[in-house]
Amino acid sequence: MNQIDMNQYRKDAKGNLVPIDNIRPIDMMRDELVQEIVGRAQACADNLAEFKRSAMDDIAAFVQLSADRYDVKVGGRKGNITLHSFDGNYRLQLAVQDTLSFDEGLQAAKQLIDECIDEWTVGSRSEVRALINAAFDTDKEGNISTARVLGLRRLQINDAKWQKAMDALSDSLQVVTSKSFVRVYRRLENEEYQLLNLDIAKI
Image (cartoon, rainbow, N blue to C red; front, side, top):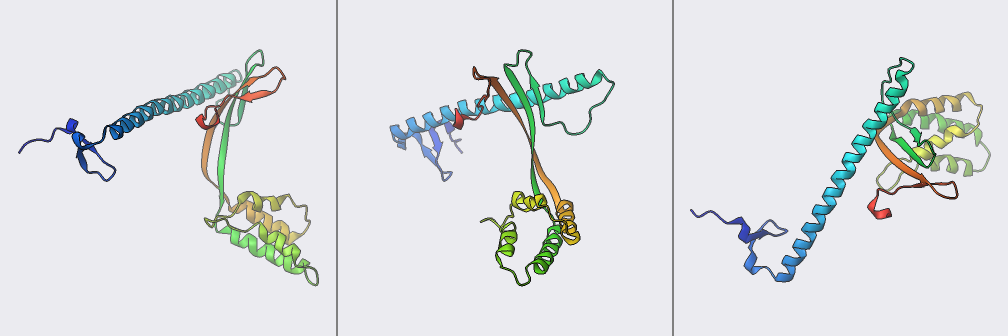
């Protein structure tokens, strides 16, 4: 059985092997262009990934070096750290962004909140309930906005049941994912710091 010379074929989008002789020259040129640019893009992505890893490691090492002056061992997750160059022209930030979600305890908090509203809105307009309930509205994917719900905790309401509901909100909050970012800034002539864009879409 003769072995197929893969150099004479290209695999199409459906996975079929198509003889190169049967492919239009313009399609071959398009494929070569795409493959070449993708290769360069992958190299850039790999370089950025390596930069992020090395920068985070270097910042963490420096934080520990600074702590060593006081014989302190820095443990746990490191984040939200800002470093400046001696002349102030450059600023590094290691930022940690948490994605938050609520567990089943949110239902208990909502029940307590509803009981508060029932007591407060007897004989009054229904807009109050609508405003509170809006915080629990879901998006197209059925997710509740943690920002809107947590915004309820900023309301200054001195009611025992309301405070219990706010405690239930806090207890039901969980960190689902955590992402770390390294941001580099340079100071402009107007003394403001400008972010050095590492996102190709923003350059």
